Image (cartoon, rainbow, N blue to C red; front, side, top):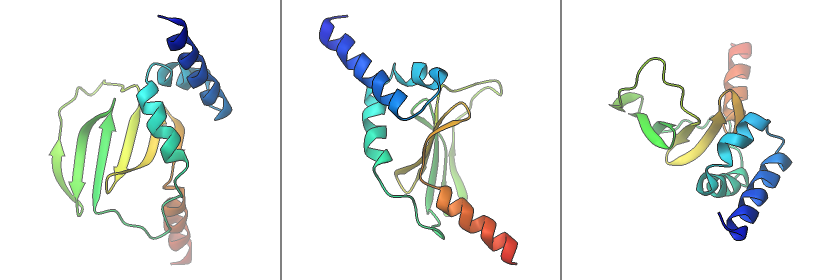
Length: 125
């Protein structure tokens, strides 16, 4: 590994520390600089609006689609063993990253407003 690559890895790790992530999450993401570059962009996007209902929902394990639904109907499901623990999971709504997590730690959660709106509706009805 040359000095430039090392510097880039240090920059990625410094950025992940700034985001307040755990050491375990940093260790996973430090190996994925391309994904971190995408996450930088996504973290600057606004939260999804309350009441938003996606048409297409995709669940990606380790950057590969495992589940896809359109209009609430399952259209794709990739087989995986029940004990498979992906290093990270991404939820895309209509092609946009809504949630990205490593283990149980959220790196991106643009869907928080949707969940709050649903919870409030439950309290009001």
